[in-house]
Length: 248
Image (tube, rainbow, N blue to C red; front, side, top):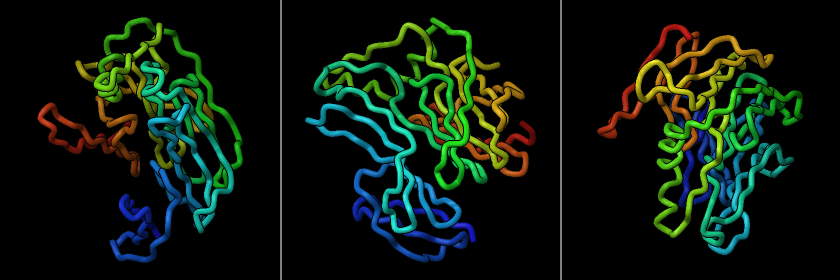
């Protein structure tokens, strides 16, 4: 039975519904959860946030939880110095991107390079997907996206320190067969678009596509079902539209 989760921030609880929208259960979640994903077998993935005005290091931790939301193990993490204390921060996304495809869990963040950690459904690391890319010093498009994500920190007197070269990717999503769709900062076919590399489950590049810029704070608003690619695009007006591609 397919389920989805509805996050209730004020109560720190997760309500579980079936695919018809009928309420099934409610469980208490750990504090400071940024992301929750149900897994086959009743377990969960969750991204725990680390932040605070006086906390020395901020960060995100990807954890594997059992059916009662007890932490079983840590799968991945990223930490960086508190920008409110340091008054400066590296101009990077600073976010763990996690996707589940079939019986595989994928985790990555751009600061680590073009590397994806691949776990089985019980949280055991089974492989790493690595690719090398030509480094680019053209930061025009890169700055545009990073300014949108963390530019507000300048209001608190925080200086953004940009890298000398563009990060290898911005974000990614997966399809049901374990293929990765990785959004790079390389300009696409039309203005405002970026090239996506399609990486097979074995780590081989099988195609490069230019579907557009479809993302929000390191999360690409996209899904693949039955060889069709569904993307949510936000217009300059703020309106969103759903675009469907028959093949990818």
